[in-house]
Amino acid sequence: MKRVGAVARMTLRRYAKSRLLHVAGIVAILVLGAPTAYLPNVIAAARRGDAEAVQTAVEVMLNMAVSFFMILVAFIATAVGSTCVRRDLVDGTIYGVLSKPLSRTEYMVGTLLGGAAVVVFSWLVFGGALTALAALATDPLGPPEYAMLAGRCLQIVTLMCMATLLSTRFGPWVAGPLALLAFYGRETIDRLAALFELPGVVVDILKFPFPVLKALGAITERVSRSDFDPAPVLPGVIHVIDYILVMVVLACLSFRRLDLNRTSD
Amino acid sequence: MTPVLEARGLSKTYASRFPRREFTALDDVTFEVQRGEILAFLGPNGAGKTTAINLLLGFVKPTRGEPRLFGGDPADPRSRSRLGYLPENYAFYASFTAPVLLHYFGQLCGIPRMERAQRIDALLDRVGLADARDRPVGKYSRGMRQRLGIAQALLNHPELLILDEPTSGFDPLGRLMVRDLLVDMKRAGASILLSSHILSEVEAVCDRVVILNRGRVVREGTLGDVLGRGGGFEVAFRDANGQESTIVVESERDAQHVLDDVRRAGGVVVRYRPVGRSLEEVFLEDVGSNEGGDA
Image (cartoon, rainbow over all chains, first blue to last red; front, side, top):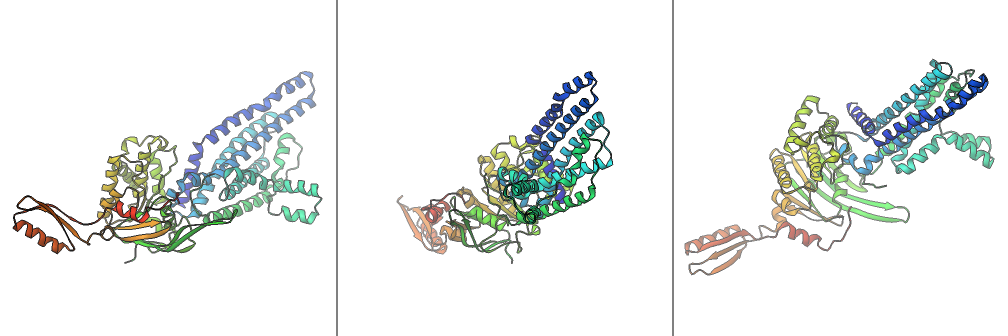
């Protein structure tokens, strides 16, 4: 376990110094500011004394903030997942690491833990900003909403694990988009089913390997509307944890079978 | 005694699907490294040296044959606990300093913190990086990175060192440091697999030689055997009249008789040496016709 911890800490430290996350941080600040572009509409509505228009404008601002952040965090998770192991393979640092008494499973688990820590940190920043926005614009968030946020965070960790699994076989520019496609697999299949008019049973079978994202999707509704019916969070969380474990096991198995020749992308 | 490192009939074939093509990087390679010896592992670019090392360390799975590290499976981390490895063109996480990286490797080796700190200080002194310890590794020269690579390979006091081009990027002083280090390690009882293209240095330190060409072992033996020593001795002398002559005899005893005769007759021995070739000559003879890329 000490070796796994050492690999996880090193992965976290590497990303803390990575330009990728520095750029993401700058984008996050810009994203925070972006919804304020809609602020003149709120002020104009308030001057007219139109309470309904003010409420609508605030909802639009919050929706923008949530959507931007979801995209940003998904980007970070995909980038971290598709590069955390691949980068070591391509630049050759993996040879030094794996010549030490460290199994490939320990290396993979440690790297995934470090990557997950990066994603969770990004999510904490997002959660903090969301809490502040909600407190300012609508009602403060409560325990059900925080539970949903935590569940959503786990979903993003799933995306990262999926990208890591795929990066053991493909370069980052293939693994990243494939991971996103798989992560949003249910929506993709729904669209394909509508296009080709597939029978319901076939659609259900096709959807089976992909994660159920809607289980924890009510957070967006809650932030923009106060009269929502909170969905039960626990089954969604269990589903996602299940999914993460499957991804970790598959990533370890795939990495154990990999011939570590020098590669270039 | 069990060899510390053993390749038994190792073969590795790479196959591509589209278009269907096969490339044999290694073909039935067998050799071993015994305890306390320095084995020179030689071959031109593309001969399969790095592939063989990757197989012996468990990085790549063999198509046929069996690699053994300390008598065990190299994929088992316990087999690697007594190993030090320096890959060719070692890459490090560039934004960290040498002590941070060495602490990381020390953690992976399971060395306790206090001991780790002491070993790191001593190693940085030994490889001449003490003054550069606070600089990020990304700002190191190639030679400095190679020194750091050597330091990480020695961190766990290995019983077996595998060095792939250890003097690559070094100036003459750096090469001398590596040679001293190899001699010290051997004196301490460590075994060393040394892969290098600088044959004069290899010749100065190694006990046995394996030469690989196009994925096959083309020569193996002790340094003396490989260089042809034992096959004869050359005695050059100047007789009492000042005339110079050269005699080649088969054995050292015959050579001693010639030397005695020359001295008795009032002559002067100008040169006395075993007849043989340099490692470079042997190497060129074995692989001279090879034209390959890196494997």
